[in-house]
Length: 162
Length: 273
Image 1 (tube, rainbow over the protein chains, first blue to last red):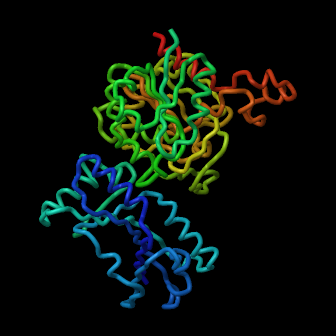
Image 2 (cartoon, helix red, strand yellow; image 1 turned 90 degrees about the vertical axis):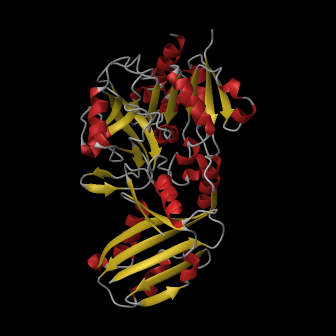
């Protein structure tokens, strides 16, 4: 079973605010920038797994979440469909993903039934008055060459979705 | 004439006072320089003979460690000063900032050739991730005087040094590594107390056990270990530095030099040249 889980802060995300301010200081016309995290959990488990374990990744007091597995949906997807483009960044050896994997395997005693946990940071960008192609081009510049703002190619990879 | 060093203070820097103290201990004039002072008086920053970027968590490591500080306009000034031969050194978060600002390794111009990835050391075959705060050993592997910080270090010298970081794994493509080796740009490497450069002595999984590196010219030095935290004898740990055990009860002797005083003396010598 593949579980896709998104989470974002209910409050302002300081990381997104700082990133937006920095990009503006660098001269980029970024109108809005929000941040979420996407977890992909691959596990050989039954349908109760998500409800039993989602508190590993979600604190309802501070997170909005949205999860999808086996056609079932939990949470509010609208919170995660913002911006013109989304840059997903994955970090090699991400300690948050490996910690979540360890907790699920050992503290929650799922053992090797949990095959993998992957995490991506989703940066949701809104530009002022840019068409789709221009927005994609600018997102490419910000994630990759020449700025490498969102991803250092030596240990991070990225993909862009409209 | 007494040489002046600006210790750059970004929001979230937290080792700047120790660094100022270490620089003063060798007779340099060290002053704190806040990141936003440059907007008021750009000329003032250019009057310093050297620049130090201290450890800490600038901007709370938002995005990734060192990223936000590296985009500050002050870093453009430091880049210009480094081209004139001024000395710039970064310790821990300072190293992460210099890497993200592309001042090291600077082999092919200002391209982003290194990343400071999350720790992933392998100790006895077991993966060690997360924050590490410990004493480790490093061996000086470059030739004496290869960089501004190594004038007083013989090749092969082994010294203990503290580290404290979560994202300190030097990560670079093999072609960059080979060129850095060829250029003698890897100054110190993690090793055992006997100087063996092995995987189990590499606390964060750094490529080639790299701990401290420099740019092509040798005037920009970036490393994760904390030299400023091993500058006085009282800062040393007695289980890695026997002299401290012998000095117990002697307050004056404790104020003497620790293992890394020569690092700052080397910087001073280089600034005076």
